[in-house]
Amino acid sequence: MIRGAVDRLDSEGAVGWLYGVDYQDPPLVRAFLHHEMIGETVADVYRNDLEQVGFGDGHCGFRITFNRPIDPTYLPFVTIRPENVDLLLPLPPVTDNYRDLINNVLFGYPAAARNRSVLGGLWTDRLDAPQLLAGRVAVGSCPADLQPPLQGLIRDGHVLLHNALAPNGVSARDVSAFQIATEAGAGNGQRTSALSTIASVLFREQVVRLLRALFDDHPVAYRFDLLSGDQAYGQASAVEDLPSPNECIALYIGNPKAPVRLDCVRDSHDLPEFGPTGLSRWTPKGANEAATFAMDAGRSIETLELDALDIALVGPGMMHRVVAEEDAPAFRAILAPRRITPRRFLRGNTTWSEVGHVSGARIRV
Image 1: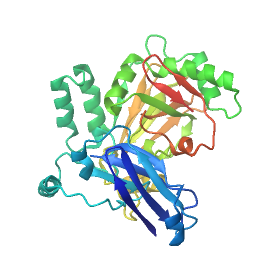
Image 2: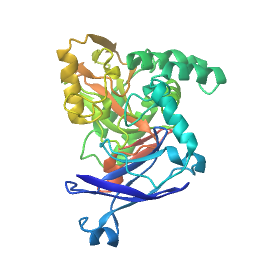
Image 3: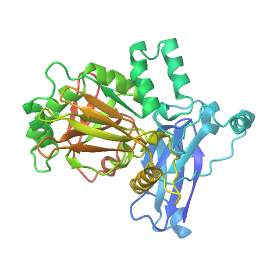
């Protein structure tokens, strides 16, 4: 059983507590405004009042500082929830007739400006994403030349950027850099040099502009993998433990030695969030269940083929697998907005290397 509440909520942040007898580590708590994550923290603050009533050792309080001041009129729309649990923590009473009006509108028009996922996510996860994209282009907040690839990502769950790495593509030096970045025993200097090389490959202008439009933020690469053989079906949200799992993109690069194949389960990014057992498909276990369901349901497969000049972006929720030769693996990077930080970095129990790029994009591994 999980129990908790928000004791104070204001424009700067929220204070409350979260306790569960099954938590082995302090749980992560996140704050959202209209499905956008505006703050996160770990519930490990000691509170004597909680210890006195038997909530463990009392280290279950939290204090979330929002990433920007929130207009007081929007506070009724702030939600606080623990990680990977469909549970809203009770908020202090707020009197606002406007909130009742909005709730009635959403009840009458369930498809209006809603996210497919309870957790929210990228704006492309909204039911009205095509209309929202058209509006962004019309008012000039999104360049018109980005509309076709963004439309493809919304419609298909993936987009293939042909010749994004032209004219030279992936070189032997780039391959070596990816290998160093995925080795646990690489030295700091060697790793930093390799990450700088990777940054110059990943963050081409075409790619960064598209990622910025997707994330509404600068992109950060948090994980690299070399994949070969016939991989199992999965999705980007289940690869890295992100506090907001469906705000991520899997980026794939082909190999100069041989083509790389991506098999995508058609329309799988439109599947319901929760499966038959109640697991969210944004989690690793739920993703496996969703992949099995899609295969049993006979979903068709769409195949993408990448060479050393191509980059593929696969959106959250799109179930796919990599097929590559052993001596010509696919290069994968998991990217998320700068406002999102993987849990393993938040815990502070590991060291990392970080490299910046002139575009504003970063690598942190």
